[in-house]
Structures are given as structure tokens and as C-alpha cells.
Image (cartoon, rainbow, N blue to C red; front, side):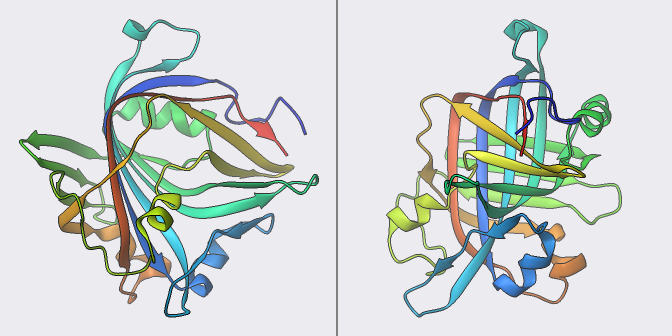
Amino acid sequence: MSWFPRRHPVPMRTRFDHSLVLTYAFEPELLAPLLPRALELDTYRAPDGIEHAFVAVALVSLRQLRPAFLPAHAGFRSVMAGYRVLAKLRTPTGKTLRGLRILRSDTDRRALALGANVLTGYHYHHSRAGVSFDGNRLRFKVISHDGTADVAITTDLAEESPSWGGVFATPADARRFAGPLPYTFSPEDKGIVVVKAYRQNWQPAPVAVTSAEVSFLSHGPFAGVQPQLANAFHVSDVDYGWHRGELR
């Protein structure tokens, strides 16, 4: 293990005003080619015996984003979106790390997209994005430059027992697959860069999705496939950050 990967060298901190993550279920055969050989899918077998793999669509309104060694007032705001395959990495010691392989990220900050693509392997794009919060209604909207990653999602935060389509047998099972997970995995030539997150007062609440348009899940490998919403969770007003990456 090396402490000096080419990417992800800087620990970061921020504060989430809102984090909304929708997790969609797919057949494992569809998602497996999206992972490098060192990773494997983090799957779940439903009560009907069908095995599911997952893509998480994360939408975040954040502030005070900055390197961890800078004060909070030096950070900035952004609305971001990310598309991640839920994956696992087995270490030589036999430990299994559960995390995310990021396929694409979007931000409303052009400078952030440019800088993040130098420092990370998260495939950032500059897009127009916004968030609104009205009573119990939380809405995210993202407009990408070519239409391949547009988002329009509305949720009802007051719904305590939302119906998501019956993938998970219990609420506890659904929560195990609620994003973000503890690690992200970023492939490099010499291995996998593992980035560990840290957070405070992290208590995601299930939410009802009243409408969702996610064009990323209708292009590329997802074209012609109907994604199934497996869960949706929301947190607000929490500190979040991640450590510098480790090359494994």
C-alpha cells in the first residue's frame, strides 16, 4: 500500500445542506463490465431470489468545501451530482471494503470541475444545477451540456414509510445500501486508490420520490433498460469529509 497516489492527494472537508441519494437496482451482468478487475459488485438477493446490483445517484447541496487544512470561510458552495456503482474491494488480509466506483460527477462550478479532474478520478463535468426546498418538498435539477446527465427529482421528506418497489426485504436491508458508503474506489495504472470518508451526526432518513428523471440511466450501457428504484435517503446539515487516498 502506498500513501502517495497520483490522484486524491488532498484531504477535504465540507458541510452538506442536503444530501439525497437514490439507489437503482439492475441485473449484475449489466454493471459488472463497469468495474475494474480488482473490484466486485456489492449485490443483494431479494426475497423472490433475484440478485440485484446497484447504481446510486447522489445529489448534494454543499458549502464550505475546501482542503481540510483551510478554515471553513475559505470554502465555497456547489450543487453536485454523482453516479456510482456499489462495489466491494477485498484486501489481502481478508477484509472487505464496501464502497463506490464513480462513473461520472457534475458540478455547477466550472473551476471545481477543472481542478477535480486534475486531483481525482471522478470524471467531473460542468453543468447547470440548482436545489430548492419548500416545506417538505426537496427538488434537485441538473442540466448537462449534451443532455446525457440531466436530472429532475422531487421528494417528499414527510413520508415516513415510502414505497420503493420491493427490492429489499426489510428497512434495515435498504439502509445497508444507502449512500454514500464508507469508501470510494478510483482505478489507476498501479492499483486502486481507496478514499475513506468521515462524517458526523449521519442519520439518513428514508424519503418518498414523487418524480424522478435521470437521463444518465438511459444512455450508454443503460440504454433500453428500465431501472428500478430500490431506496432513497436524505440527510441535512451534516459535516462531511474524506481523507487522502491510499493506493492499494
